[in-house]
Image (tube, rainbow, N blue to C red):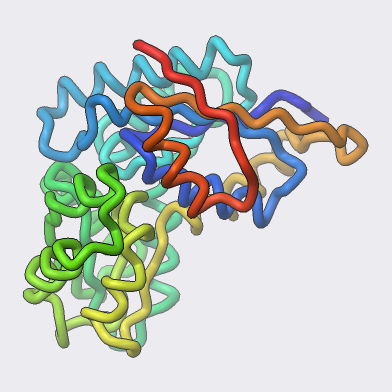
Length: 264
């Protein structure tokens, strides 16, 4: 048993989609979350800068005595997850392998689409993982740089959001039967994405798939929180507006949360 919290990092609010799934599947676990909304989106930034920012988030979480770190950010996973995983002596999980595996299980036609930030798509990491696991798959990748700013500005339900999603996804419509939401911000746009792609296209939430791996590792390393420890003190930190973060979180998480501003 280990009553220390699980640490989550993201470039902003997108990682809350992973936290929501954790709270559903593992409600006894405690969460420490840091979202770097002040410097979001990470996707268009150079790899060296993403690496620097991500290490700052990792080091912040380490000061909170976490037992595990979850990269609830596809861009950070693509750029620096391997490096961080090698250097830390606690488990470090990314969201890309779970999302890739789920896509292969889901597809019937073998036609899989990946949408993500420019850096995630440029890294080609999803296509590599999918083809390593199942070489006969056909993968189409598409960068959607306008999606994260929509979410970070809390404009998910606007007519502008619908127009941008429709225009961005048009190259994939009718060509795939499975679409990986390769950015943890994208599930916040899920209803619009599903409407554009059509009801027959299965959407894969890479962050939600990651929670299954969290559960496996907690069991393997005997890190589960004691079920008799009833009091949970979830803590959320943002580098930007506390008010904006709480507004989005209140729509997405099943409980009221306290949010604190931090400067890294």
